[in-house]
Amino acid sequence: MWFYNYSVAQLEKIAEDKLREFDSERLTMPKGIDVYDFIETCLDVPYEWKNLTPNQSILGVTAFNDGFWWVWDGGEGELPRKHPVTKGTILIDSSLVAPGAVKGRENFTVIHEAFHQILHQKVFSQRALKDRSYSRTQDISARIGKMKPNLTGMDITEWQANAATAAFLMPRQAVTFAFRETMKIPSHKSLPIKWSLAVDLHVEEIADMFNVSYTAMKYRLFDLGLVEGCMIDDGRIMF
Image 1 (spheres, one colour):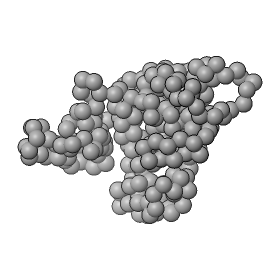
Image 2 (tube, rainbow, N blue to C red):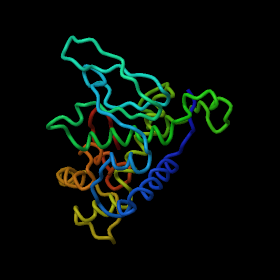
Image 3 (spheres, rainbow, N blue to C red):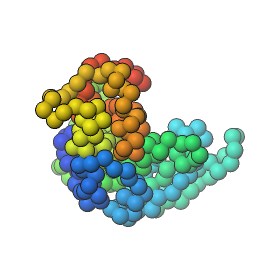
Image 4 (tube, one colour):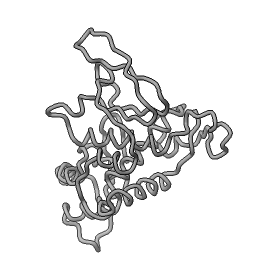
């Protein structure tokens, strides 16, 4: 598996360029989003909702070539069937659009798969083996935070898609503006501020402005350097 060694800055630029193409207002101001409109407008690839696994262990997949994916149409204990997909197809697990599902989780999954289409169409191509811009890099763990040793190519492409998705759904300038406005932090006061219960109580409000989940926005606030401190959540420790 071969991939381009994108930097964090490159991924953010790619995300912002795509956002500028789709809806430039979202770069500077909080605004909702129709993620399927983005696929139709900027990617022009098919998308479908299917039961991708019997236990929702996989929420989205993207097809880099014509082929098939196993889907579960029946109840528990039923056997899966082959579902044909054409190159470029994005499949989203049906649980993400079920009644009561978290919209922010659906949005992140859809855009994550969209960025696989944008970033990784060559990763499984034999032609990529001859392209010097694609390589098996080993230093990416420093960017991820060394949370996992011996990173695979799949780990790295997943990280790249996640980073681009966060930058697309939660643009730096717009999130900074929303954070200051919500927390009533004047423009002359420098950031970051310390993570606190007061900050935590407002994260959901900011997340709703961008149609993302509480968890996604919380990590974005840390990644953008708007808050600092120690947070332990879902096994991730941030200082």
